[in-house]
Structures are given as C-alpha cells and as structure tokens.
Length: 116
Image 1 (tube, rainbow, N blue to C red):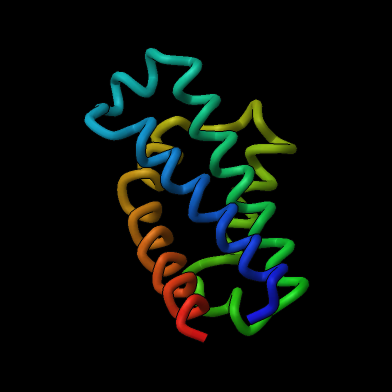
Image 2: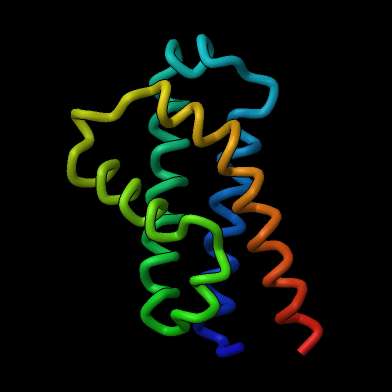
C-alpha cells in the first residue's frame, strides 16, 4: 500500500474516532441542542469524505473496499456545499449506524497495511 493511501486512511480513522468520541454517551436531543457538537461532527464527516475522495484517486481498489464510500463522499459534498439543507436526524443516524462500520473497516485496512 502506498504511503499516500495510508495517510488518507489515517485521516479517516482519526476523524471517525473524534466523531465517535464527541457523540459518545450523547442522545439525539443533545446533538440538536449543541451547535458546537453539530459543527464538530459535521467537520469530522467533511474530513472523512474528502480523505475518501483523495484515496479514490490514488488507490481506487482500496477505496472500493470501504462500504458506501461514494455515499460518504456525496454526504461530504452536501455538508460542504448544501450546508443549509443538513438534516440533523440524517447526520445522527449516520453517526449511529454507519460510523462504527467505517471505523471497523478502516481499522482493518490499516492493520492489513501494517503487516505488509
């Protein structure tokens, strides 16, 4: 695995870990009430989406091993370009259901890369 690809995986993993940390022990109502939390989570997802986009350019096959990577990039585009249309329920749903999957998959890819 190329060093550049590893760097993008690391960025994804770090941003995913931060989003999980920020939201750990929180409920949807907490998320709705806290603008700093919402912005932090949205920023983490923006970083994840951008890193995936860049990863797809340097190693498309590796990127394809991440479930729904195209949807994640599309979600990043919404966060960045259509920020006024963000639905907190959708973001929270992604935190709850998709973020753990992404974290597991990218961790596995990083582990695989470290064994090479």
